[in-house]
Length: 323
Image (tube, rainbow, N blue to C red; front, side, top):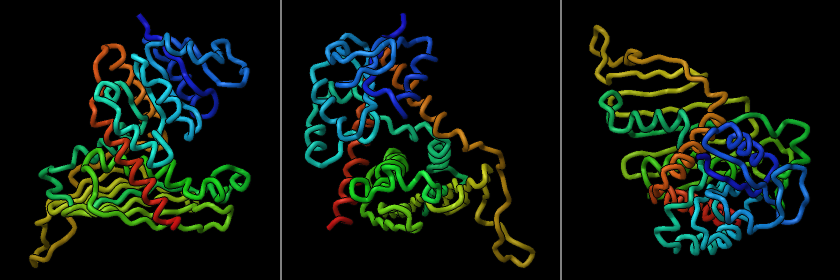
């Protein structure tokens, strides 16, 4: 029997989620909610109470509405799939953190890079013999959006309302990915810049995370060619993903005839198509959520907590840079 799903939102990202619902034989889309508009959809409703009859509710509305909907659904006994970020300020975050365990295990915030190729590679190489102890991780994801004509008139370019849009919409995914695997960092440093001179919001930013024995660098930009790279350096080897090519080089003790260190041999080499990684990881994230609704089992509370930790750091970095 298919689970009944209602969604708050109908455009842009919500459209992708509607498609995933409709493609999944275990799901039935029963309501598409908007609080005021009369939208052109056969499942449309303006009655919020209609959603309460669903097995699961998806919140894919503007970021600043997420908290209000979560509060309205505090007594709802079904499951909630809420797009990131959970909230847009620290006061709201504190209230979410006080939700009880039952509430926390029925809400899933969609940081879907937890299901990406990047995450698979990270998990596989944590404490691996081939790589040894990790001492540095570098993540780069960038492209040239800031140089497209339509960028100037988009919300992303508006520094009055979205000065840190890159941090809020892109970097937060990779930060969450790192926190999910390694926990919270000791210290953080963020360096935002406007490189393209198009618009008034930052189009480039580097986040440095300091852990006890290693550092992480996350670089995101709208002002470069398309670059998707991952570099993991350990005491015994290196993992690199570049131009859709994954290479694992090991061991450290590789010498030439004169006993000088040389670059280790490539032990693993394979192609990984990163072009569709976002949509693939979104599908996996949605399917992960659906599996819990179908089985009526709690979602591990660590996902809720990591979502709060990632959002907390993003909000604090914004506040520091605005001072």
